[in-house]
Amino acid sequence: MDRGFGVERVVDADRIVVRVRGEIDLMTAGSLRDELCDAVKQSPEVVVDLQGVGFLDSTGVRALFDAYRSANELGHRFYVTGARQWVAKVLDVTGVGKLLAPPA
Image (cartoon, rainbow, N blue to C red; front, side, top):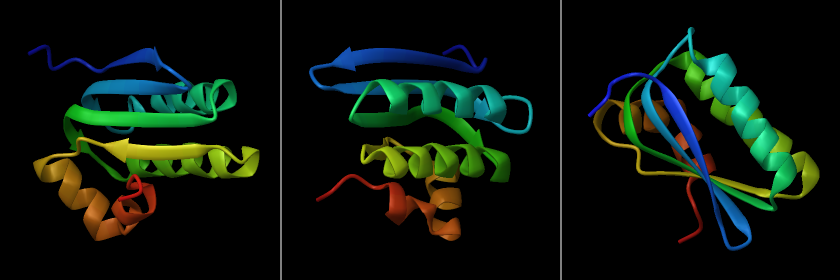
């Protein structure tokens, strides 16, 4: 699998799924934030798939939270799915994982 950072946006019915791959860090978090906030403006529901992400630092957590906050301000929904290993641990430890989890 290509380890380079990338974002793919897929329109699925009345939502946008944003698939992210690579590392989310200081170098990529700004681009991710911009992409997510743009998606939030275009759709009432945005789902971010982190299955292809192997690393997430605090700037990445902030990018996810900023997009979540933007969605809330618009009355839209924003969820994160597919976090594994280190990425899931970071989301769990920061408490952001529960905040961004899709409804059960």
